Amino acid sequence: MSETFQALDIPPDAQEQGGIEVLRAAVVDGAVSVALRRAFDDPATWGRLLIDLAGQAARAYAAETEMSEDEAFERIRAGWEAESLRPGGFN
Image (cartoon, rainbow, N blue to C red; front, side, top):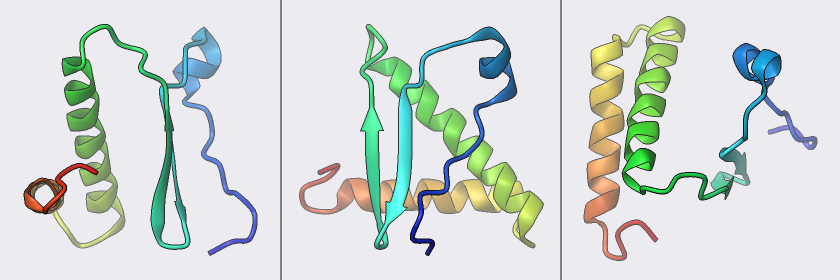
């Protein structure tokens, strides 16, 4: 890992049209560190956001590895399921 923070670029449409950042995540010493803004009136919107993120991550795996998009998505889903069944659940 790098000793300096390596930020992603702002998405082009947000750069052009503006917007509100709702989520920032980083890996620090092997753990995920997150900052987020509630941003939505209905928590169900976070579900839609998370499924969209999972799909984008699956496409990235398919583009950068030998794994298919479907296989990558299934592995993401399996990780979600395993974590949700762990004692303490989402904590």
